[in-house]
Each structure stands twice: as structure tokens, then as C-alpha cells.
Length: 337
Length: 302
Image (cartoon, rainbow over all chains, first blue to last red):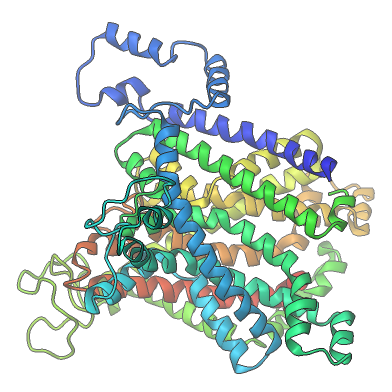
């Protein structure tokens, strides 16, 4: 297991260098030099320009700049936001809980609905239930989620007035930040109605962000279950007279879970991409909205830092999924990949 | 397509191709939903081609008396089937013309990915060693960032616009094509017909592109179809974020973005363009599922 983990970790090293090189190149590929971009419309004397270049380390040769950049990254320095003049890591960590919170609830929704309907479709294979579930899943998979979000706002917030249009919590509540996860903070604050308000604000964003993972998980669970259901041990279990719930829920699902967990792990990238759109639509103060804002306000150091941080997080999650996979399915540990 | 896996492509004759096509259609038409998807897609393509004739109005024409007109049938004045937008432009015509932009975007992304991806994949599979490692690590790097974020960053470098959005999206999809080509190329290259062709003196390019490549095409076609639909989605998403096609271009995502402020007062301006995206993507995905079942024995429906 240790060897396996080490090998998986070693695979990440070239990707780390690839991502950092890409992020490093990103700033240099922008039209114009960074200092001129910072200055914007303002005029700048050549002396001031040289001074700024030296301050940002841009007067050194490119390879040395890159090594400096890696060195800083490894020391937790992801650069400074041009707009707020704050370390990018601080900004990121401040907003990240909002994205995680939304991502977790969306994933929860996707798994809690996706896995059971996937199993149900597999068990009722070929029936109208199966076709219906697969049809819904295909629609979900094809959904432009930014439009889906707007449509839900039009219906639920505009016409029926059931849900709030945007934000994380009603402005009536002032919940002190403890964990950054608003649901928890609202509970801790003990303020009456704060938790309900936070929940209320989460409903639509959760549905929107969870739609595509839900569709994918339902589809993959179904095909994993179909494969497992034709195995001998499932037939034996059924022949022994075990209840369907035991056969499908215990014998079959356990083996189908290997595929399902991998699929769930792979959704982290989908969630991050979805977060950009979902957070923009619902003015959700998380990483996705921050990245879009940084792109538009030309805060390229923030974009660069965000890019590296997100790539690293996804890499780590995939590593954890790989290791989990090894734990659930020990056979994988002994086969050379 | 099972025949094409065992019989060398060099000896394939036109009659062989016809037989393959017939076999393909047999499997493809087995799935009713796939045929529905195909028919729908043909309809969308026709709509794009004949936009000049079937669109009831000029998509850029602003009817000053009919701002934000709700959809109406057969009214005397301001008769717009899908209503008008904030500038009094006919939504239906804009959506019909938008079909062109979306199909072109999807098509160009797929063509770029196929051509560049195949070359990189074949080169990696033929040379192996360092070339392979370098190419594949670059692809891993691209894959390590979520597609939409990668595309956004690339558009930030290239500048917003439909063409740059297409290039950015192509780069984010490229790794899938390179990986697929490489893996099926490597599987094929150890087969006997390749050795036979090598022994009989075939050159490097002949082996790469004429002997082996045709036998790797099936999974690539499936991937191309699925990428076509996601490219339409991502182009629209970039347009929605203001980084893709710029107004007044009637690209579907851009249409949603420019009417977003009206979504509560004039919901039709947002609803119909999105519905167009959903239907187009759904049709292509339906067809893609059928293609996969017909072409790719490995992924065949169980």
C-alpha cells in the first residue's frame, strides 16, 4: 500500500511542474508586459517602470524567475492580488469554504439521488422506469447549467416567489465567521432563523451545481450495476432466497461501488467548472465568482494563483480517490499500471 | 466495424466500405433514440444553412415599437412568434442565425481536435520514449485544470471573441483525442498486419497514417461526436460569461447574457435561446450514444 501510494504521488510531480510552468507562462503570454498592464492608462516614467520590474523580479532571466516562482509557491506564497494588495492564498482560503460548502451539498444531492435511481434503473432494466431515468439523465447531462439556473430563478424566485434570487444568507442576519461554512456558522451563532435562511439560499444553487454530476452518477451506477448483476455470486445470492434488498443493496452494490466512487472522485473537476457558472448566476461569494471577477478586472496574478491552487486541489483529490480505490479493491495494488 | 479490425486497411475495396457502412447503419438504426437524434441534428443543420430564407426577420433589425414584446401568434402589430428582446429584435430570427455560430464553433473545435490530436497521438504512439513522455505529460497538465477554467484563462490571454473561444476550447479538449489515438495506435501497432506491412517495406508515414490509423478511427469518431456537443455547451458558457462571442452576435450563450437583466420581466428572451442549446446538445448526445453502440465494441451497451 505504501509503495502504491508513493508511486501515485510520484506521478503528480511532472504534473505539478507542468501546471506551474503553465501558470508562470500565463503572465508572460499576456499582451504587453505586466507592469504596463498594472499601470493601465496611467503614464509611467522609465525609471518607475524599471523599479517596478525589479520589484516584481521581472528583470531576471526567465529560468531564474521560474525557480523563484516555484520556491515561493513551495513556501505558500502564491503572489499578491493587484486589486486588493492582499496575498492570494489568503483571499482564496477566505472564499474557498463557500465553494466547498456548495460543492459538498451538490455532491450530496447527486449521490443521494443518483446512486439509488441508477440501481433502480439497472434492476428494472429495459422497463419504462429504466428508459425514463436514462432519459432524464441524458437531459441533465446535456443541460447548459447557466440557463438551468436562470430558469429556476425565473420560476421559483420570480413567478412563485419561493426562493431567494442570490447570495448566501438574508441580510437580516449577521453571522460571525467561525468555520467559513455558513450552515455551521449559522448553527453556532444560535441566531433564530439564520440556519433556515442559509438553507433557503442553498436550495437553487445546489440543484444547479448538482445536476450534471447527478446525471453522470446515475448513468455510471446503472452500467456498473448491470455488469455486476450478471455475475454468478449475485445469482447464487438470489437463489439462496435472500431478499432483493439484500442482494442488490449489499452483494451487488458493494462491488459496483468501486466504479461509482471513481466516478464521484472524477466529478471534482466538473464541480469546479460548474462552480464558475453557478456562483456567477447566484452571486455566490466563492472561488468561481472570484476567478471570473479577477479575469474581468485584469487581476492576472490572482487568476494565476487561483489556477495553480485549483489544479493542486484537484490533483490531491484525485490522489485520495486513487488511494481509496486501492483500499476498496486490493487487486489494483498488485497489478502494475 | 468488426471486419475492419482484422482485415488490413490497405486491401479494403469500395465494396468493403459499403458493406461496413451497411453494417454500421444496421447497428445504429437499432436504437430508435439515436435515429431521432440524427434526424433532429439534420434539421438543425438545415436550419443553419437556410437561415437566410426561413428566418422571419433580420436578426439585427431593431423594431422600435416592439421592445420586449412577449411571444404572440397572429397579432396585427408586433407579431413575433418568440417575442423580441430589449432592443426590439426578433428572438426567433436571432436564435435561427445563432444556430450557425454554434454549429460552426462545434465543428471547428472538433476538426482542430481531430487533426492535431491524431498527429500528436500517432507521433507519441509511433516514437514512444521521450517524445511520448513529453507529449503525454503536457496533455496531463492540460487535463489537471477544469475545462472551463482552462478555456477562460486561455481566452484571457487571447482576448474575448468567438474565434479565440473556439481555439481555447479546442486546447482543453485536445488531451482526450491524443490519449485515445495513442492508446488505440499502440494496441494496433503490435498486430500482425502492421508487421507484415513493415516487412514489405512500408515507410514511416505509410505505417502511421495509412496502415494503422484507419483502424483507430471508431473510438475517435465517438469522441468527436461527444466533443461536438460539449463544445457547443462550452462556447455558450463562455459567451454567457462575456468571454466568447461578443454582442451583437446572436450566439446562444451571448443571447442569454445580454438579456439576463430582463429575465424576470421578459423571461422568453432567456428561455428560448437556452432551450435551443439544450435541444441541440441533446440531439447530438442521443446520436452519440447510438454511434458508440454501433462503432465501439469495447463500450457496447451491456
